[in-house]
Length: 477
Image (cartoon, rainbow, N blue to C red; front, side, top):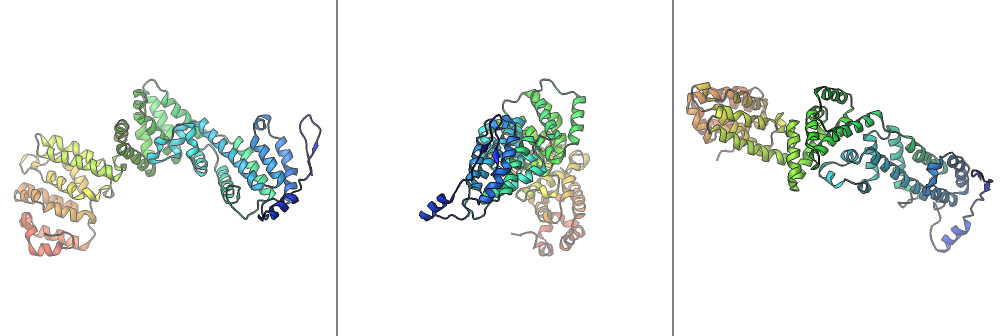
């Protein structure tokens, strides 16, 4: 057995602990002895190598390292699984310390998604994170390296599967335990945040503590720095800026400065984080956090991010804007008031896939009412600014939305206006636009029938052949 040399003291000889009496006692009690205590050979390997490892640790590390004392005791009597548990507890403490040092707001923004984010604020809340989340978030923020993350996740899996925290039949060998000890102590203590992580930390601190409006030069410099960030760092930065922006106690100058750079970061971030922010916004509504909701809405507005709101929010808000659009259509000075509401609607609909089924019929109906216009000579009755906006939506739709389009076209509000030659001309233009994206042969046949019978377009819904042709797409009551 090796000597444990303590500085300024004579070597102390540690005799192997005879565990046979204890194992005999377990047998007497009728308890299992297999895979409980490590073999003497493994315990000797540990004691021989552990001595030099601990002597090489700095006094600062050893000063309050009771977990190491427990580790030595556990390995001396052969309880390797318990020793692993002692070390792992220290890993968790060390990772939490990294999170605190980096900044809890930044860390929780990266660790917690959706509506749960507001439940995490203080150091004590770190205990609510699972160990694998703690590790993965440290890696996401580049507080630890890829390699260390892989090692720690492996040790965590071993700890969970074969450590003292779970029943098991596997025996940890001495060399495994020594390797894990070195990873958990040396590598975690030596690992430093990446330069990118440090820069993001400085960036956030600079924004949060700003007391003056950022100059155009500063904004451009920030944008150039953001362009060099990795995608996951960009996502983390956007998430944190959203949190700062929606905090009640954030100074208005800070929000203003965020507004100058947030759209650029938004455009560089990926879809997943934008959807997560949409979920958080929805959570503010559900929980009646009105102040946060208003600020979150403002953030989405300045980033042009309405398309990433939850489907429930999109349906409610699109419907609201549609009602305003229709009111504008029948109101005074509609040529000038319609476009504003149509722009708001389009802010939710970047592609055809963004159109919620729940409001597709209403959307196409109200847009058609505006697009065929008033039937007057001035600008052919259609808002000159609104017309390209309506056509932008109509150019989106394809086979999936054609049934909604046909149902809207045959509604009384539109069909009755098709007796007006100017409205009729506008509808034929619309049919040409929508037809371009069609793939289904039956739908093409339907549109050809509409063009061939354009003289009865206002009453074609009553045509027997037309009804037969469209019976698989429209329910005729």
